[in-house]
Structures are given as C-alpha cells and as structure tokens.
Length: 464
Image (cartoon, rainbow, N blue to C red; front, side, top):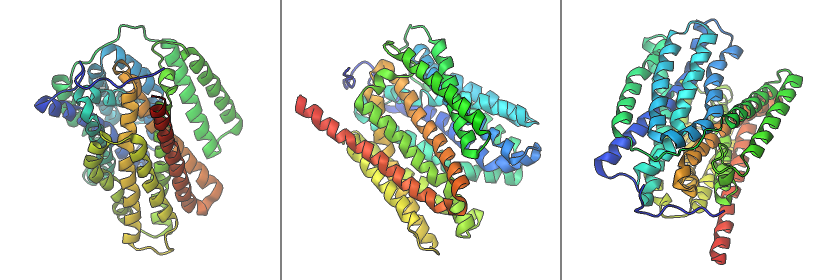
C-alpha cells in the first residue's frame, strides 16, 4: 500500500492570515489546558493525599486515573473525530474537561476525585486525539512543520509552567483551586474553539464499538498489569491480567486486519515510514521519562540539592525545547525527518550519557548544560518525527495519525514510569545512575530506528 502526501494547494491546504492565528490559538489553549493540569496534579499529589486522608500508595490513582482514561480512549476518540469532525471533538473535550475540573474541586474522597480525574482524562483525550489532525487543516502543507513545532512548544511550556503554577496556587489557596483555575482558561479556549477552528471533512461510516471495547480492555489490562509487576503487587494476579490483556490485543489486531477504517490503524502501521516514526516517538518518550522521573531523586537524594534548586536545574530541559522549536519547525518542512530526528536523538543520548558520567560533586553549571543539551535534542527530534507520522496518512485518515502521535507519547511516558519504578525496586540506591544510563541507551535505540528510515528512503528513490 502506497500513501501519498496531499498535494500542496489542494482542497484542504490550510488557513491564512488572522484565521490561521486564531485557529492555532484555540488548539494551543486546548493543549496547554490538558498538559498543565497533568503536571499540576503531579506536584500537588502529597498535599491532596493529606487533605483527603489517603495513603501515598493509594493516592497515586489521582494520577493513574487520568493517564489510564487517556490511553484507553485516544484511538476510539480519534476514530469518532474522523466521523464527527475534529473541531467538534475538540469542543466536546474542552466542555468535558471544564466540567470534570469542577467535579475535581468539589471532591472530598479519593474515589470521587479519582472518578473526576478519569473524566478529566477522557476530556483531555478528546483534545489530544485530534489536535495534530487539526494542524493539517490549519497550516498549508508546505509549512505544516511549523504548526507541529509550535504544538510541541506549547506542550513543553505546559510541562515547565505546571510546577510553578502549582506552587504559586498552593502558597495562597488550598488544592481545589488547582482545578478551579481551569474554568476561566477552559472557557476562553472553548470560545476560540467554537469561533475559530476550521470545519473539517467527516466520514459517514459506522463506529466499531466492539473494537473500542477490545482496545480499552487490551491497553487497560496491559498497563495495570505492568504497573503491578513494577511495584511487586500480587505477581499471580498481575500475570493473569497480563495474559488477558495480551489476548484482547491479539483479538483487536485480528479484527482490524483488512478493515477499510481500522480503529487501531493497522494499515498505516504496515507502512515502514509510519511504523518507524511511531516506534521512534515511543522510545523517545520512554527515554525522557527515565530522566524526568529519576532526576529529581538524583538531585535531592544524591547531590543534596533543595526542592527549589531541583526545579531550577531541570528548567533547562523545557527551556531548550522552547528555544529550538521555531528553527526546527522551519527545518522539518525542508529536510527529511530521518536526518533531523536522528541527530536530535543522538543529542538526547549524549546529554543523558554526560549526566551519567558527571563527577561526584558537580556544580550547578555542570548539571544544567547537560540537561540543556538533552532538552535541545528532544526539541530537535520530536517535530519532524510527528510531521512524518501526520503526512504519511491520507487526509481522511488524519485523525488516526493524530491518535497514534498521542498514543506513542502516552505509552512511552507510561512504560517509562513503570521501568523507573522497576529499576528502583531492583537496584535500590544505585538506581539513580542506572536510570540515566538506561535513558541514554533507549535514546540510542530510538536514534537507530529513526536512522533506518534513511535506508528505506534510498531504496524508494532507487526503485523509482
């Protein structure tokens, strides 16, 4: 199967002038709302657990409920977006997110808060399942890389702003206000989404509910089982859940084969370039989570930095992504993703390896430049790799491609978090350095898969 990029100047070749600016503002605000809220909840978890009288181990479901709901619903929601329009799906997501934020603020027990967070994760998945697809109708084909880079910049800014906002709110108010601040931001985002997002084509096909159920059972069971295994919780039950999830995944794949509009985009994954981009993105986020989750422990427990110093020392990561985004956006529209993404991932691997090889008593500058190098590499790798996924799909399958971009990110983050937990459980005090070594090795693997696309490109050119 050969998928061609849509011709520039075609019927869906983007918006221009102020219309493009307003539509991109709607997408940016929607994505920012979802990303900031996830980062805020992570930082505020100890405070929330104390106030609702939940143990640290059980309170993690405030985070897990959001992440799990997002992962199991991304692909079904992307399929629904193909049918009802990406702009409408984004608006539905914003409305659900605002409602769920209100329910989170009103929660008084762990169960109530976890259920509200699951609804919030579902609303966030509505947004993230179609945000990349919307870029295809906002930006002309020749400069779509700029839109993807800007989207990545917004995500990086949300990650960077989340802890700061959480600290600021908690210094003057109690934790429910962390969710109440979503109401005005969500209201503004919804206003722009209603008035500015472009109408996108819809598909008059039947939604495959059975595949959606199999998808939820497969991903949900696999994630929960791996999480239980990573924490050493009930190995027999965990293995049984793992087996059930595997059976559901096999059934899902078999059901998708040969379907013209598969919920799990098997047809796109059969394309070498698309498959390589998905694997590259997945491993890139596994590598980044090895660093992001373990580094605060390294800085505080091993290197003796305070919590404030730790936050400042990690800032070069998102800051570097923000700095390189405008340049990489333009470059990704001109140079092959295999080249740029590979270079970026080699930078990431070098930065993580340099952190692993740090002296026993590094200065703040020793730490900061290494983190900055890795962050810059991540900012170089991601936009062209996402662009490669998005433009590989025909325009009517943009929702599926957009969903897979989010799936690669969410699964990479989830698997990375589980592997960090497993590493700490197995290695104890030496796990901090091991995580940095594993982060570098994983980034090198991602670079190898990314570089494999160069061989594919040369083979295609030779055949032509």
